[in-house]
Image (cartoon, rainbow, N blue to C red; front, top):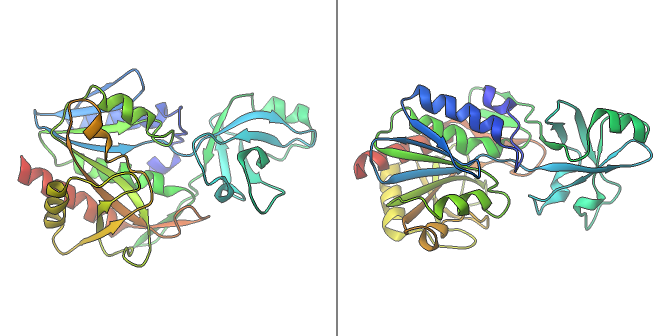
Length: 302
């Protein structure tokens, strides 16, 4: 559960990358980072790569108000209205809450972070210009679910780490700045060679996707259709605990087709209850199901 305490805003993912690198090396993987900060963990000589992003929504300080509020820019999220009222933490440890006077047509320039200061000078002393913040997970759990603020970012990472424990002849790609239009992923796949790339992400709970009902194999994302051969193989590998769904999120499943030397692609998602709202919910069984599905697929192909 300590992974939920690691802050990983887009562009400043080094703490999460260090955590994953240490884990990968403990499992016998050869781990290296590229110039973009992407982490590549490899074991054996298989041609399957499992990918997930490691960054969360970034809020960057760009100024202060006379009343002590912090003015922010949110370059990595289009749904800035969902941030209002959420607890955030700066990389230097300062905690605050996102405030906004508007209720409609909210843009990032309308957001402020309240850290409890009452004047500009007090805010300047606590948080330097350009400092990054991201959502505080603020976790609670029971025997079936994990609940928290912005935890959908962590579910793919946890799933990938579970697969790493038992996979051989597989590469794991932990990509940075994925929320910046897949910036790190594009940079990595431009020169990385793989036969198949399986991307792990999340999908909101909806009519055809239910939490606790297993992993979701993606048949269509916003910008692309995954490779039919891989999609069918993933569904088969999931057995009884698999759902099939489409998402309006951009999972970048088309990138391996246009970057690097080409690859087949597939998408596996974990359902998230109230994704993007104050307290998201993730079923522990769904993380386990997604990990087992991907491992079954790897074992069959290898």
